[in-house]
Length: 195
Image (cartoon, rainbow, N blue to C red; front, top):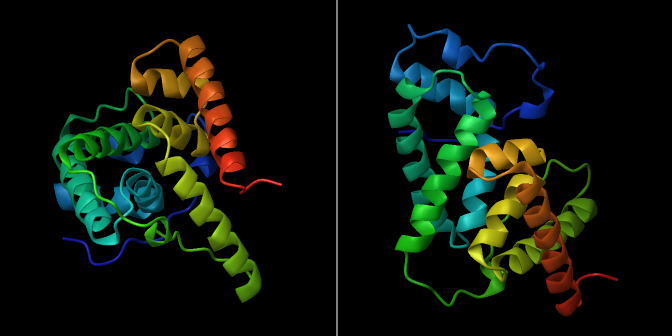
């Protein structure tokens, strides 16, 4: 369906109040709409998939599942939330389904997925890649519900956005996010990955 995931501009750079193009242009074909989603949110979807799957081959399968789910869900998108929130909801729901459906595997942590870094030099890139791997490793040692809320927080969603996405109160979302951050910090300290 899609050969390469384009690197997308940061969705947080979108002007607040600007109408989502997907909600506004119902004349687009399904293929045009999914291509637009990939252009704007492809990197975001890839990061969400990395939250739910360590194995690179299984992660690519999950990405294809997310794309199919998005393609099916796009005709029902009415613009009641931001495009980014809609994409995140579909991606996280598909990730949860994938996580509950798969059999647990005993993959070593050194096979955790790498996220491409456009850093300026090889040393900085290597350092950032090692930190990312340690973070993903610590993240994958946490319970699924904790991983989910952390990944939403790491994507920069506010407590209100997380609450809307998960169907909980904003206060509950903020409390869960705070607890999840503490759990991640403790996991990183336990692994000797924090100074």
